[in-house]
Amino acid sequence: MSTTTRETDIEAVEGLPTIRITREFDAPPERVFDAHVDVEKVKRWLGPRNLTMTVDRWDAETGGGYRYTSSDETGEWRFFGSFHEVRSPERIVQTFSYEGFPDSACLETLTLTALPGGRTRLVAESLFDSFDSRDGMLASGMEVGVVQGHERLDELLASR
Image (cartoon, rainbow, N blue to C red; front, side, top):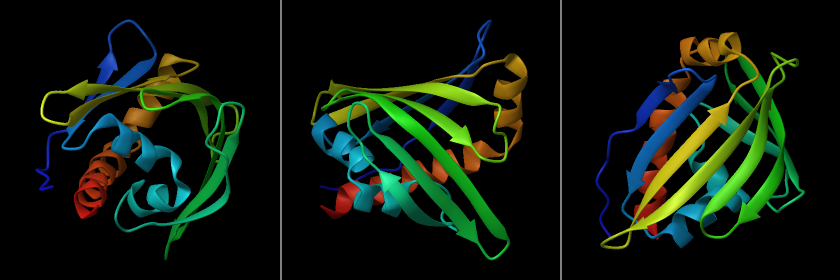
């Protein structure tokens, strides 16, 4: 299956401390979902191209949790959270925390919708504990990791 790089839309939801990410993929929801829960696949696509991911824990099931480190020659960044709901192939609800900001956690809901032609629309909404936290995330440069991660996910999905 050939894959086309598509645009990732990242928006601050007006009136809510929420970021919404929307992206379409040239693969069915089952494959996109699997790429989000299979740790070996997650390590191949999540985050910017220049970072290496080391996973300490990845229990992608309802009630499970995760902890991983992203690193390069300049440093390490650690992330962790809990999977509240993992429902194949359409929904993942999880918390997300960055150790650099331990007092701030967000609730993320990922929804996958089947589109014609075996394609999928991904919508990820991150609800932050404050507008300051949301705006800080947007100002952090997170869009680089999201866009490059989605490009890497395109490559993974095309590779079979």
